Image 1: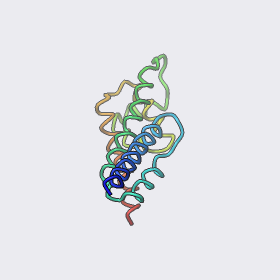
Image 2 (image 1 turned 30 degrees about the vertical axis):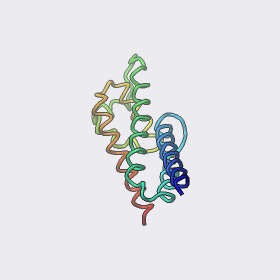
Image 3 (image 1 turned 60 degrees about the horizontal axis):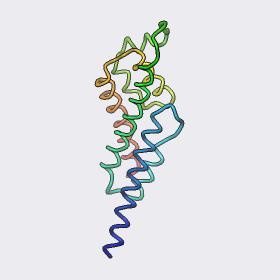
Length: 141
């Protein structure tokens, strides 16, 4: 029986690792969706609610920060019209970093504008956590 418990622990760990990786990749410029992985993990292991929620948020935030970093590496040769709006709202605009396509552009633009990376990560994490929390709660209903 001890081997069965060990096997289940490994499966739970693998599920959480898969969730983290898919959340990370989904937040970069690569296509992908981590919501289905979160839903699957929570359906299989409802007791992993908080670890799954926190790991998906962490992975997605780190992925967003990769896009932010890529934006920071781009030269600021000329001002872009749409980027001025992001500069006006500052890092709180990154609360919307979870929105498909728009979120990637926001993270990239925030890096290009050289916004504060700590504030950027905080606002990204808040928005991404809220989205994953809503999905996780809906999964339990």
